[in-house]
Amino acid sequence: MSFMLRDKTEIKIFVLYLLMNSEEPVDFITLHDIVVQDEIVGQFDFMESFFELAETEAIQKTVIKNKEYFTITPSGREAAKMLENDLSKSVRERALRSANRYLQFRLRGAKAKSRVVPLENGKYRLECECSDKDGVYMTTSVVVATKRQAELMKYNFDDRTELVYRGLLSLLSGDVNYLAQSWESEDSCD
Image 1 (tube, rainbow, N blue to C red):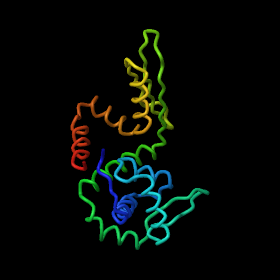
Image 2: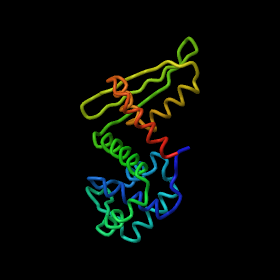
Image 3: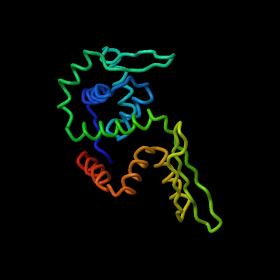
Image 4: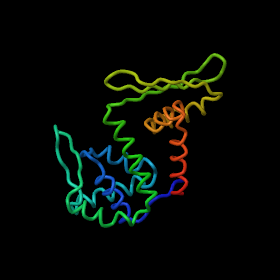
C-alpha cells in the first residue's frame, strides 16, 4: 500500500502543487488522474478538496472550445508556494514525475488497447498496442499460463499504460536505472 495523504489541507496543497507545475490548463478528468494515479490521494478526498479549492477561488475554470479546463489562480499559486514544503520532498518529486509522464503521454494523443486471447494449448496471450496520430508505435505480447494472470496484466497495462511503455523502453535500451528510481521513490513514500 502506498503512502496516502489524509489531511485535507495537505491534499489541497498537493492539488495546487500539481496545478502550479502544469504548463497548460487541464480538464477535470486529467486533473483527477494526475492527482490519484500514484494513490497518494484517494478519489473521494480529491473530489472534496477540488470543490473546496474552486469555492475558495484557489483554482479557476476556463472554457476553451466548449470544454472546461482548470488552472491555478494567483492566490492559489501563492498558497502552493508558501506551503509546498509541508509535503515531503519525495512525495512532491514522485507526484510531479508521474504527472509529467502522464501529461506527455496524453498530449501526444496516445491511445492504448489490449486484449487477452485464449490459445489452443490452454494458455493465454496478452496483446498490447500504443498508437498516436502518426500510427502504431508499440506492440507487444506475452503468453502466460492462466487467464487470471493475463487479465491482471491487462488491467495493469490499461491502468498505467504510460508507465508500462516507459518501463519497456527503459529495459530495452538498457536504462534499468529508470525502474530502480521508480521503485526507490515508491519505497521512500511507504
